[in-house]
Length: 341
Image (tube, rainbow, N blue to C red; front, side, top):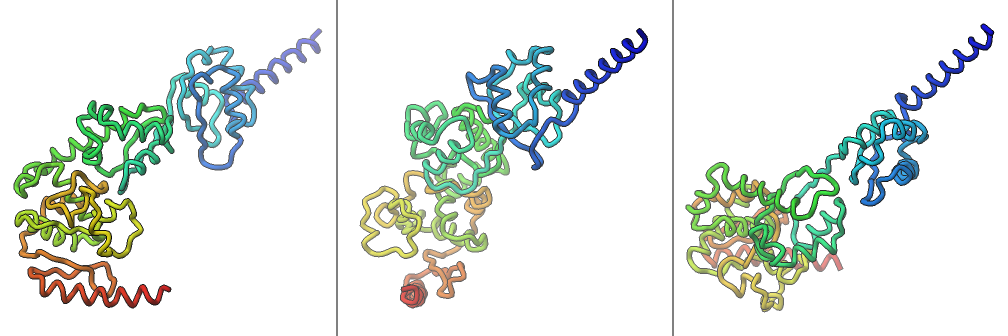
């Protein structure tokens, strides 16, 4: 009798130990620091979730989760979303995460975007949507009206930065957060009053910054380039900004602006149309926006890239000097292009 009792106690201890190991021990089967999985809408039942975990190589066994789910009834409480499991995480910890709907944070990193298609692709790749659906929304003035913008001014509501969302955040909420952040940006550091002092509205300052952004990567030159464009605007001269030609043609690989390009009838062609284009041609960095707002007063009206291809520019206040520098650059560019053939 004592032997039977002893064996019974041993079996109970073994079962308890195994159960504890299944529930509280490491249940992951991957070697990297973390791995992600997605619970789709309509796939929150026990069988679907366990299958997802197994097929994505998240867990080595599903028995611990299955046991916990039965005891704690987590399955009816699971919400769709993208979840993060860390290496060595226990079934208990995973179950609690699923029950609480604690999704993984998603970082949306926005740098320079040139087109709505770029934005649609970025969002469609990371969120519970697709680029086609996003693009349809971005191309609709009726849809964008709820955000207080339109298809032309959309980018003015976006300040490049890193934003935190969840995988299933609705598109409208994503864009609303971007716009809210933009509003906060403009309310800081007297940016609105600085724009007014330059004779620009908030959107005009952003649009000008988008052109400056595309002209050079060097901040020292950006200040001078901004001053050139501000001077030309004040004098009623066409901006004649090469980046607007590339945008008008939707060809950002162009390295040389030919005469034939200048006849493009697009309203973004600042060789034909005076003033700023209808809207921004990219999403400029916060730094470039501030450069436009703080551009120095100069008498420059022209600039051209230096013939050493350093990326820096020559600046002039008269056409004769500008033409001399331009011819130097064109000569070196001809040589460079000939050597490429």
